Image 1 (cartoon, rainbow, N blue to C red):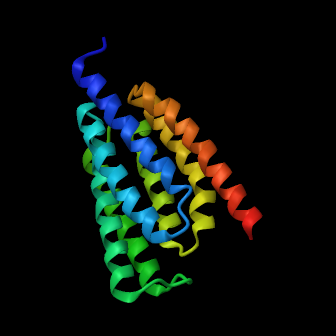
Image 2: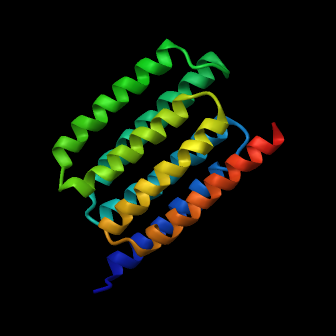
Length: 177
């Protein structure tokens, strides 16, 4: 049954994916992180409305992640190479995602968002936009499956489109190089 809450969740889902699609066309990591941050906020609202609590937990993690990376880039400037601190942050974020998933576990399919979040986190830990765009493909596949699990019709459709955007963004990036 389609309720008002479900319709509102789908509107927030639409906003999420419009913003996320824009990240695959960004040329700078800073813009990817800022637009990605806004996308995560909209996604968190959608997941709350859908009672998808593992997804909500991964959004909280994503907000923390994006704040860490935005602050680091502002404080230390843009770097072209991944350093030990980036790897440490990635490992800590992975541990936090596992802890969050323990508290929100609702069957195997609830873990799809955890796996997708870990791959996405790795992609933004890297300093290359091309890695981000390439890893967007498996990330989006996992989120398509998660959206099927939580029955988010708009999420399924738009995540599939986002997979295509990621692929196109990666191809364009490779052509420009």
